Amino acid sequence: MSVKDNQELIKKLEGRKAQVQQSEKKDLVAQETRRCRAMSLTALGQETLKDGAHKGKTCKEVYNKQANYVIWLLQHQPENVKYLNVQIYAHRVDEESTVPDPAAAPVVSPPTKVSSGNMPMPSEIESEWDEISQAPPMDKSAEEQSQMVDMMKTMMSAFSDLKIQMDTLTQANDQHQAALHQSFGAITQIQQNQERQAHQLNELETKVNQS
Image 1 (tube, rainbow, N blue to C red):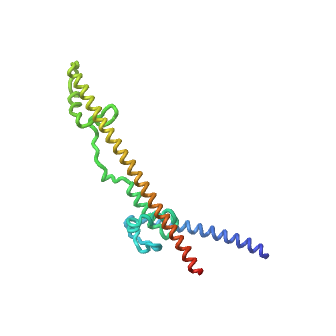
Image 2 (cartoon, helix red, strand yellow):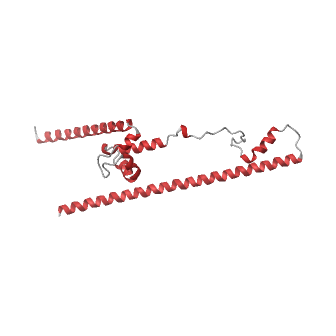
Image 3 (cartoon, helix red, strand yellow):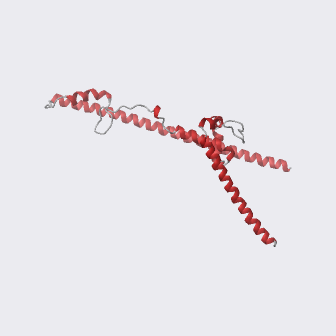
């Protein structure tokens, strides 16, 4: 066999080796994912990290106290078996927090009065509505017509107040979302600065060792 033939064979074997390693890695990730998913959330939260800066700490402790670290793992180590338990714990906590609890759901009684726009009638005009809806048909006098006009004005004022309240809540929600987005951006920037400093430190240590 020539040197060229050997080199080609080595290249093929190295490619095959890389494929096998990648396949084995995927299998390990799948097995660890199934294991962590099969555990109860409480048991998974008590499991400890086996490596890294927070080795020996429980998944629950790291999740509750080291949010930046969990974010970094999700961004940079999503398929590292050593840290999958805390990442899956974070996913499961998020999943369970978004599932509504039927026992905690408020009991909503059906509205007794509904306007033409399918909105519940304000309580301050409900009694007036009862009086009018239960009264026998009769020719409306000028006084009755005036009462109807006043009632309609009251209804319009109540609905206007409701609209103002809804607009206020919408604005507050938008401000809350903007604050969350800003906080996440700040956390990301801090993480990037930490990574940059770690890289600079590694370069400095290399230079020191070489000197």
